[in-house]
Amino acid sequence: MNLFNEFKKGLWERNPILVLSLGMCPALAVTTSISNALWMTLATTFVLMGSNILVSLIKGFIPSHVRIPVYITIVATYVTIVELSLHAFQPAVYKALGIFIPLIVVNCMILGRAEEFASKNGVRASAADALGMGLGFGLTLTVLAFFRELLGANTIFGYTFIQGMEPSSAMILAPGAFITLGLMLWGMNVINSRKKG
Amino acid sequence: MVKNIIKPALVLAAVAFCSSLLLSFVRGVTYPLILQQESDKEQSALMLVLPGFEISEPLVVELENGENFKYWTGEKFINGEAVQGYAFISVNRGYSGDIRSMVGVDENNIVLGISIVQQSETPGLGDRVNERSTSETIWGVILGRSYGGEKITDPWFQDQFKGIDLNKKIKIVKHGTWISDMREDLLRENAVTSITGATITTKAITGSLKEGLIKLRKAKMVTEGGDK
Amino acid sequence: MEIKVVIAILVGTIFINNYVLSQMLGLCPFLGVSKKLDSAFGMGLAVIFVMTIASFFTFLLYRYVLFPYDIIYLRTISFIIIIASLVQFVEMVIEKVSPALYQTLGIFLPLITTNCAVLGVAVLNINSGFITSDFGLVKSVIQGFGAGTGFTLALLLMAGIRERLELADIPENLKGLPITFITAGLLALAFLGFAGMKI
Image (cartoon, rainbow over all chains, first blue to last red; front, side, top):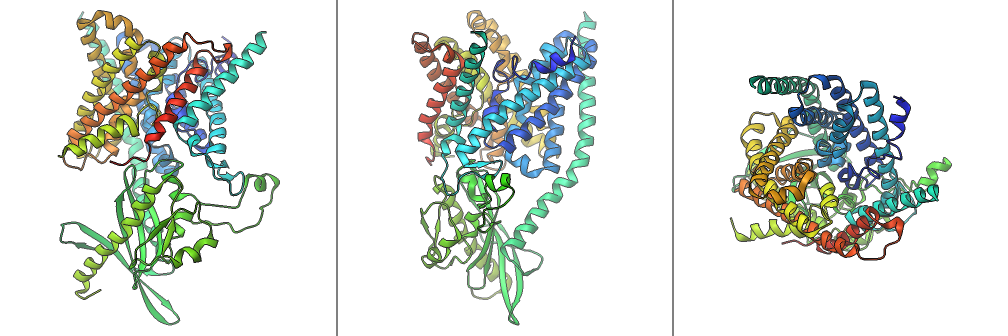
């Protein structure tokens, strides 16, 4: 089992958002700024790695029909740790990400990887898988956030882009999110078909 | 058959137990920090709305409608003369939830400053109450130098309230994002410019100021037993 | 409690702050089940049911256990457990009552647990300040019902459009998810027209 391959696949071929269609709720809602996207990636990757590693460690002890409640409890525990830590150490980020911090629990990506991969593979592979997925998630989020922040708030990472230009609020709100993601998916298809053809 | 139920139940219970243990620990570590933040926020808002004032402990007065109104008194010396200032928190329902603003006024009911301590308005719209305008552009950062212009550190929406007369009606105009050049003209008409696309948020905050002042008057009458 | 408050909550959650098209919650099932109108409708009903009941129990738990005993940090865990159990229960009921629907919904039924909109509405009920207001429980349940209805509305609209899109001549690279998201974006843009309405 090649560790690097397990890691690499999460970045493009099995990108959680663009290919597996997992973890889209937070993807659209927190990409209002690059900073938010990065913090969300950090939080989610922490939970993902924690849960993948733990599930892989104790997979022998979990009877099959309680596995989903057990996974959920594990993920929820990690999420609560993230919630409390962010609230204490980074209150501004906690406020910015708001309701989406507890919603990491229901990020289908985390439960999905626990069920599909961590429950069937070794600890190191599970960790690599989690890291790759987390990074793939983060890259997608950052690209999304880059466009939305640029066009919707006229800033990049908080710094003004063009002086005195009033940005397009629709980009910061839901329509901008949906359409940008749609265009990204289209772009990905175009790139993939170029590779094939 | 019994084993089928006992083992899963035990496993679940064990997981739940470990989880609670871990969480109580994390909670114990983080809770004092969280509490500290809340009080720090209030303190820094006070400093902002009554700049340079020596602020005394807050007073809590029960008003006629049963509400407990909390306010601070501050004293500053300008040219040897003692000047009084008051601060209070005014609350009003904005677009999505309550907006709490710390307001500082002088004896003549002129606003010395406001600081919005809590809001949950729409990001990109009402959320812009906390937006700080800066002439620091991304190009300036990349090229390693700033492009001149003043770097404003207070949120522009709140900054523009300095000098607003609460005795008169506050006008709301739509002149786009506020810049300091607008201050004179706007204050002449006792006006504030609203956030583009967030008129409800703007109205909620402006409305809450007047209301807060009325409560302050009533509270002062109770404590000082006088007229004003 | 006046009827005006009820209408305000309902119009708010169904149109102005639609959970899918405005708040961007509940996207996984939104994309997964919106291909056909009938499955969309069945899923919508299941979600309305789960959201309404979940709102009821999570609110009670928060107000009478979490808040008074100062264990609010257990909110996330306890809420998700309540929701997971509810979904399990709904699954069993549907299997008994309508096996056909059970077959159609397939994997999507247990996925209601991970529907961010369900946990979302439970948390939003708390954030709306209902804990300390009069008739808080009733308001929460109404908000849960409204959220589910708004979700169903968005789902039905999408399904109707996607059924038509099947027959349209779409460029190869836009087929599937890309055009679906762009469509959702246009729907969201339309719903943006409701923004700023105050009742």
